[in-house]
Amino acid sequence: MKDLQEKQKQNSEMQKELDRLKDNLTFEKQNLEVADCDCDIFRSLCNEKNAEL
Image 1 (spheres, rainbow, N blue to C red):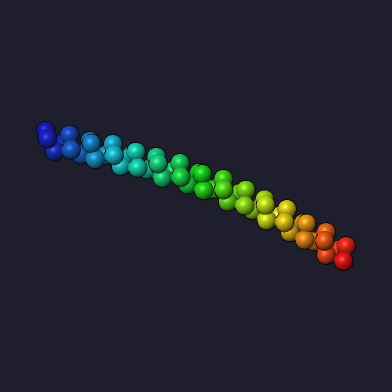
Image 2: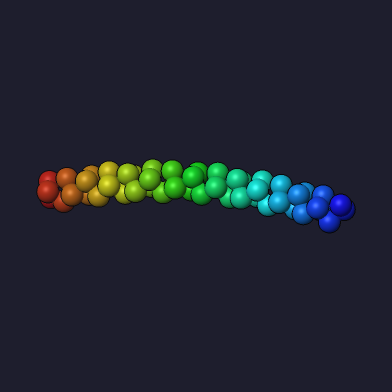
């Protein structure tokens, strides 16, 4: 009985950790998308500046 409770507690803790990692991954993916967009904007601005020169 005690082993079952320990396993359930461990499973619960592992699920919480998995959920936390999923949330972190989602957050980092969003940051990457923003950085990619910023890079595209910067590239466009550089191209415009080069065209002016």
